[in-house]
Length: 493
Image 1: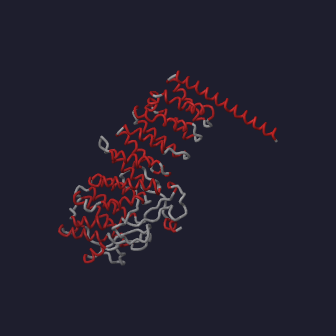
Image 2: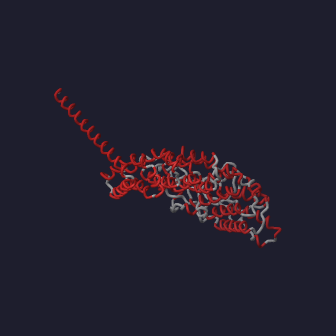
Image 3: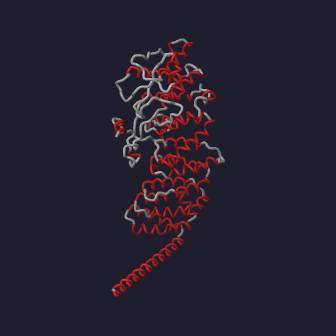
């Protein structure tokens, strides 16, 4: 109930489009606050900024949290461009201090003047970093990246929609998305961090002292934010960190692995799996060949098991892209991927099964003949089951595989093995499937096999007829035995 009260009044926003990667219009947010203590009562409380004089600077910066300022105590500082060059570094530091007070953004009537001063200050800082108007000293960089930015973004997050509300069974895609009330200011802080990272004036050797493993872990924790705007910024920032700080790359990959493991095997709840997979899609695309064993293990231990969780629809598009990237990079991985899909193939979830079939087509399109032959028997046993699915979308999606020329070519080369496996399923559809579209597609596939190899088709037809005759004979014998038992029982009575 508390969570519902907190979130009341925040409208639902549409889910992000993976094609918007790097656009910076989404967000998320949950972060570990180890080593950063912030004065927040709950996840729903926004954070703000304020200003302090030079004598209290270090005390406030390193204290448990920045205090809420008394009304009227924050002064409106002059613009950086309006002061002499010699005074700009000191003024830059004072402006950072303005952004270190916290405000309650749930109450729009409190500290209106102070909030506007903070917003204008953040806008100026972003412009300063982006334009390179002044070269920021290492000391000021440290104050900005190690203190001001963490104080604003590394915060407690409100409970997720399903937590402590009795709604654990609600589908993640049906939950109302939470919008961070402090976003107008929080977005500027994220923009400042992004501009600092991508700036050509930022020396990687200096910056890596501030953007260290602890900082990266806290950013990754924030991907649990329910606000999609925040997750979008986090995705872009983490991707830029991965590109600029080569020393952090193995650590980032390992940390993302750990998030996936916890999601797969423990919680099956995480708001940012799709965004993390978008980052990985770009990383995988840049893998050098021959592919390292570490990357292959990541495919087997993390990516393929991501097909297991129930809310896969939330991130399947990004996951499928990563999987196909692996196969396109190293065609020998096709057998591993297809067998992995078969291992986690859904039994009762038809919508999930449609997703699997779509992904399977993409993988098969990048599969070579040798790898196809290794897995075609279990693969087409599963496809035969899909052909006979009473859910017409599953059967229809399976039949669409024959619309792909590359897949048809693979099937034609191995028709002696494949047709006997699926012939019975095709006949059943033609004789008894309730959906006319499925019936028509099945007729087309059956005709394709007939034209492909008439002799093989005739042999399969004979075997099917013999099998059907044997089944009919066995059924008659079973009925006869039951009749005899019934007669004996009546006589004995």
